[in-house]
Image (cartoon, rainbow, N blue to C red; front, top):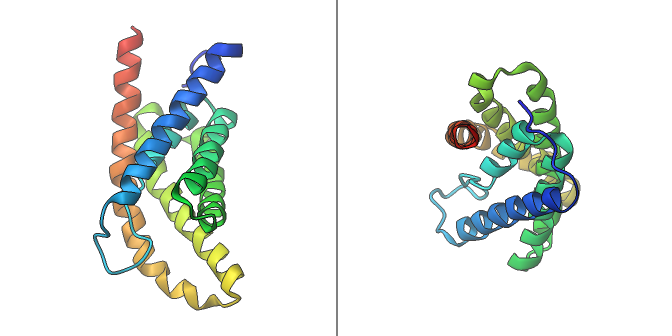
Length: 171
């Protein structure tokens, strides 16, 4: 499932391109108006790149792309609290993807994304609870669970299609 590892400049170039793509998607999506009255609900389209990186390149490279996107997204958006919330959510999501990577076949990669989205939302809520020193923010969990599953299915299917198309291009 993992591509042959590129070393040196080729690997750095690939990771930089994936980070730039994910960052661009993140920043464009941040400019879109909210689709619901519940704060924090969005599609998370940049996660397509993270899922691709996890299954095509491996956990280490996926973590580098994720960390780069989260850090640069916070810097470019000017919202440094994004670093904390996206970092917590991204790390928990990455851990879930690491576990799922071992058990999913090539045809089931799309299932990883909804689970990762749930973990991302949970990580963000745990970070918010720590910052605000209250568990009241967990009241958002049912809404974010529904939104996470729906958005995760969409991004998961998109990542599955991307992986399939890129594999065909290699042949």
